[in-house]
Picture (spheres, rainbow, N blue to C red):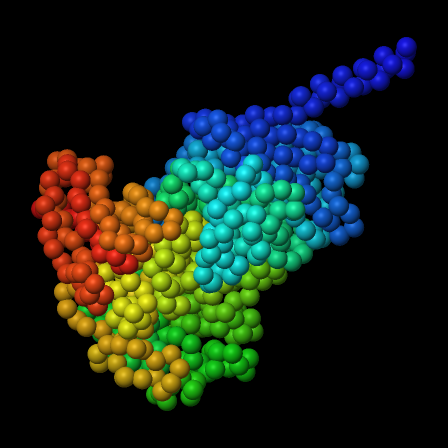
Length: 628
């Protein structure tokens, strides 16, 4: 009887302990709630939206160099904190950001492996985020071989995926997922419920991608290489699950990614200036002067000299401290210092492209030299991404550039995780299927709803190039994309050249068309690149999007429509101050004329919605300006 009583007591005690390990956490408005369940071999988190289960995350599935970190997890301590604060970004999609969340800090002890880990869980009204903090003594110089965090759903769902940052998106089902997807990954859980899974504050860790879960319907994290925990500062990036009733709200709420990063570390940011960029590819003095003159006349802040100005970019022998034009791209001549000095006198900044091969060898020599030349920023090209070393090196290269007051645009496969908050000289990045890939309008809408959740995207905008009308929705769609797809540095004529520039660069990189100087071009050039407010109005994941952005007192309403002719209603009364009268100009495509844009004044009383008739497979732009 004593043995039976003893085992019964142990069983009852274990039940009592299990009951105590379900820890509730709510978002500030209690819209989202989570149950954090500390189990013997893992910690699970079930996320609820307005009472409905959305996703279950299973954490602490960690594989170390000598063991699988699964043991008997116990709570050593726990604290809960609440934060509600605002901060002003140097630039962004809004001029003021609110950071409001409740956080649970769990100190966990593994009695089997004798290790301690902190699990930080934050709940915002916009989503859930969590990260691991490893005890330095227990994990001294250990290597993490894998992380198998799982995000599980109760039923099969539609999802939109791409396996490379610059590839096309494909719509599929969770059950049919056959690639390792780049993040963020959007999943439609219900008719009016979408989630986005991604990572934030990836600075010195291996990148996370998302593969098909082995434990049920869902996805699980896949690291792009090993992680030395000492080099990573004994903490992981944040993993997040955003929740919204519309895909546009996921993008509108993308400040969550910035909030998961450290505050700005640059004390004097006066030299960090967003703006429009004109690409110079002739690599000649005459071409540079022509671009500077055009930029100065049209309010374009920067001219960028593209690959080849210091020699063949893929040749490790090319010396980026010299101006040695690649003969395969241009016959020259190029007096780069003369162009830089001329541009600075005209109020135009010069940006230089430098390939990773030169950066890896010469970075510490190049940065002070370029500052001495009077260069304003760099475009890092064909950078290595994914593994821990490449990630750490690249962010260190951004920090080093800040020391010399140089802004940075990272091209190719790099996708942001919010580091522009910490070092705002990282002004933009590619990691996007931009216009140089000639995407159909459907792909641009997928880009808007998926890729733009994680931050600015250098979309390499085209305007007059022939491909715009034949493949990409026409001129009116390009106007709309200037507003919809956010980038503080925005290339506005990727394949176009000023009339006075040489017609060819001698081969590679030649521009396709001449920029027409008229009132519509002037308006296209005048559209801002950063904003004071952003609203996603309506849309559909596969066919159209309506985005409204404010700069000062002006509102720009962008419509991208990949489907049939559509009527869109713009609720201007929600934004416009009632005491101010506004003028409304509508820039649209007449009929099926892809190579034409017309401007039309529309009635606007500030109270009644404005209705737009949008042609099939194109876009339009509504510009609202106060009448003084």
